Image (tube, rainbow, N blue to C red; front, side):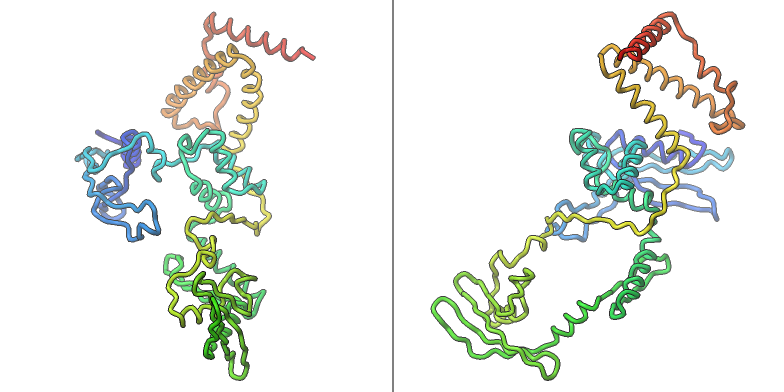
Length: 410
């Protein structure tokens, strides 16, 4: 096969992978100076590797299966076109065309979805709610060609105009603002040459105070053993001359501990006095009441975004045209959906217009001097005034009469 550009060859293999049910990646690129000579595109399951993340932390760890599927594309210097010189179609793993939309390479956001996300973000609707609205409209998650992460990434990268390189800069600016608000705030940020974060550390005034408070030593007096529980007296030295005393009771049967400082009752976190007693008694297992739900990896958190800029985003010309077309189509669809006959006529007209648009687009490719921004009435006269048969004319006349009758109704 022959392609005019390397991009066309890559798009061709991507379309094939979507139909077959797998995703691709670029394995190797050979260059001659600044020009590309050839490129090797393989299946993403190529190679033999295993995720370093433990299965206990990641429920679906990925692994390479040494898949041999690939294509080799190189340029023919004498004619300046690209050709596929080697193809391997066999896979070492099963492909799933029914679920191919869930692969990262094939997840896409349509124009309607992108505009809806932008409107919801402007209205202050959370990304999770935006995604759930798409799920409700589609019927289930399987009917969508994207996941919630794609919605959040689009908001971050496109709506808020924050690139991956700008993440580190924005994070550094945030730390500087925190330093201006609180002089005791400390941070250290090391960036790599490509502006990615290498090391980051920060501590506010409360964290520093807690760290200084933790630099203490404990003295345990002989425990008082009573029926069912044991009482300990902990003498704590803070700094050099301050001494505090706390009484801790521990029930060996229920494995419950209670300290006089009441930190767990107020904050939900065991104090270091209680932990020292548990360590002294060599308690290995604790009751579930001390393991908070927010510490679980399965907890669902709800985060909100506070906008730091009031600048209105500038819409692209294509977005403006898309909004106008959607607004006009809403009125048409509302009218046509009142009956099966009108809906059938509208579907027929949609198919006809779409075919005409595709035909016009193909014809326009050969006109290098004509673009959609500079097109004149004579250039698109044929498209705007297509040949209408008697049957088509009759259908349109009936539709016009129906529209007039509807408009005259009180």
